[in-house]
Amino acid sequence: MAGYAFWRLVQAAIAVFGVMTIVFVIMRLAGDPTLLLVPEGATREHIEALRHELGFDRPIAVQYVAYLADVLRLDFGQSVVQRLPATAILASRLPYTLELALGASAIALLVGIPAGVAMAVWRGGALERLLATFVVTGQSMPTFLSGILLILVFGVLLGWLPTSGSGGLSSLVLPSIALGALSMATFARMARIAVVDELSKDYVRAARARGLSQGAVVVRHVLRNAAVPVVTIAALEFGNLLAGAVIVETVFAWPGIGQLAIQSIQSRDFVVVQVVVLFVSVIYVAMSLLADLAYAWLDPRIRLHG
Amino acid sequence: MSDVLLAVENLTVDIGGTAVVDGVSFAMRRGEVLALVGESGCGKSLTAMALLRLLPPAARLAAGRVVLEGQDLAALPERAMRRLRGEALSIIFQEPTASLDPLATVGSQIVEAYRVHRGVTRAEARRAARDMLDAVGIPDAERRLEQYPFELSGGMCQRIMIAIALVCGPSLLVADEPTTALDVTIQAQILDLMRKLVAERGASILIITHDMGVVADIADRVAVMYAGRVVEVAPVAELFASPRHPYTALLLASVPRLDATPKAQLATIEGRVPSPDEFGVGCRFAGRCPLAVQRCHEAPPALADIGRDHAAACWRSADVARLMEPAS
Image 1 (tube, each protein chain N blue to C red):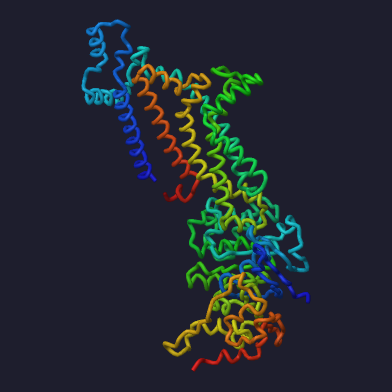
Image 2 (cartoon, rainbow over the protein chains, first blue to last red):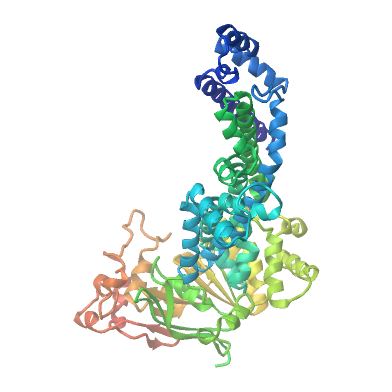
């Protein structure tokens, strides 16, 4: 188990390093931010001076090594636009994204898993068809469309919930639904597949032969066995929700890191872009590591002998 | 007739409109070991599952009665049937390891089987589970109860399954190919164990198998199935000595024998088992039977008594002895 964990950590580090490198290169390819920073009508000397001050006149390889050295010292640089430490900017937005990711996860798990289990247990019936329609809708509707529809119906027409911004629990509801819908569909499908798969196994028949009702077999045996694949997905999905809220945060004017990423890209504030992407990739890799550990914890065959 | 434990009458199981178990009837006495023998796909396992009313979703109990201790199981509501499973009749399966929940300790699964019927405290059920492990010959019971199925061998898991099946003291144990997945040495141990436990408890065993060795080892009587029907029923010694259905005779002739001439060709049965859509109106073995005459293809022979405790479903049962003569 320890050897396995060590290799998973090495893999994780390589993944994060790869992401850092790609983002660094792509941001440099996108153009020189100096021109965006200088006031209109600045002289050539003025521009060159600023470029030198920010270090953009050095070769890209030198800039890259300097960047890696800084990251290793946990110095993630200063925003070239706001002149603030990039980590401070990130930290100021993080609580909003966390809040939204938790809201979306709650909706995804609390709706998706019961829906998936119900679809498996009553498969072939009217309930399954009804739930399947619901799940496919959640899965296939693009976020920018579902977000705008939710705003139109619940914000504008019915006036029940705020249309945008962050202010209390009521403003969290619509963006959580918009963001959680896809994960909800994923959980429902995964849970359904896992439960159907388990229901066909010999131990289910054997448990019924002991005198247990179908419901008792599902609750006592099937759910736990089916949870193994679902938990793995859950951790990955949470990583997704933290990282993938760019569109929802834009549609709902939610001041999280997704919106920060868009704003930073538009102003070519690549120090901030780098720190956002680095953060998101670390979260994502950490979640997949967590998924593996949860898998091991749930399954005694891995827990005891892995 | 008070010594009749189980009477299966005209049991018919239907898959997609075809009777894959077709009018099966047999009876079992208390304390008896009855073997239900046949090739794969002859309907013997479906018959077993029909007794417990645990047929797969595609199959349907279309007709028949399953009278266990005077109660027709086929007519019971599901709730009442559930109370009998594990209590009055139990089953063990071919794949012992797959039949245990991989994520639950074996102890918890025995405890569950006991508590669902007895409603006792966990501690009492645990005591019963420990006693059961002792009874099925698993040493170091305390530690074993905490183990998971993957930590035990196949033979060990089958002992656990037997413990689960017998913990509530059922009067009938159905054993569906209980030793097929096990090593031959373990196989003999499991059969011995089943026989001993069932004798101690005065219960009966219905053992489903395709293995004549298992039949000879454990059974008192044998019911032979072919293509969804029972074709012969007889005490084991009599069946082996003088089968009265050509299928039984050919099946026995195809078992390798230690006393046969070295290098003698092993007998085979020509052709293959008909699939349900190929069943004709007559005897289902007629197409492969060396004794078949016109009548065999036209009308199905009923299972008829042809001697004391011996029945066969064959128009030519009187001529079957001919098939048993060694080929020259």
